[in-house]
Length: 275
Image (cartoon, rainbow, N blue to C red; front, side, top):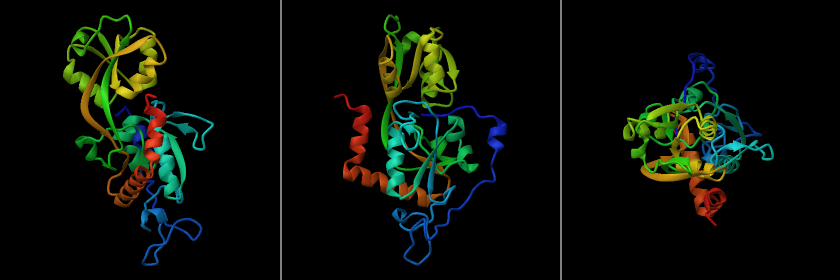
């Protein structure tokens, strides 16, 4: 996923809020040297958490099947990303708190630097540009881009977008792909998938170009079809504040454990199984 617009006021809000979470007798584990740490599962290292005992996660919601609202769950959210971070928090013996945030604030590092959250889980593609402002965990999902149109559309490929309106999400790799490969299209930028989908349903745009799993969700909601998929070698990763190596290592360790135990596959099949 991707990026979105953030006002200067939002960027400035809370920039002094970087709190180091030191473990307590009730909370985290204790390292080999006797020093208290935030989470025993993280090897006794302090994870530099915003709130002691809690993994605070920022995500741009909704973006199904990766993140969506669900009051019936413990966190209030559901989706592939949300289930993974819940399992990671459980493995680290931490509570999970999820905050809905602008994607542009997430991919730019502003939300993390402002102390709004510890981890970004928002279907975010790992890119070299983003690595300048963020540290990433190991990749946890391989994605493609795709072109969604109405079933009765005469658009059959990206070459047919010249002079046609195509919706993209601000700051995303889908937007970059469209600009590079369909420069003659009338590109309309939206802050999120919800706005894009509404415009598509209302006939305000002729196509949507974005992550394949999200467009697949839309084919289940109306008379729309995916006419092309694009292999872009994209891989999603969880992002953390630059320099928080301990948290990156702790999350990577939990991801590996989830894979080894088969839990990752169970979560994956919940959202992506074709059966």
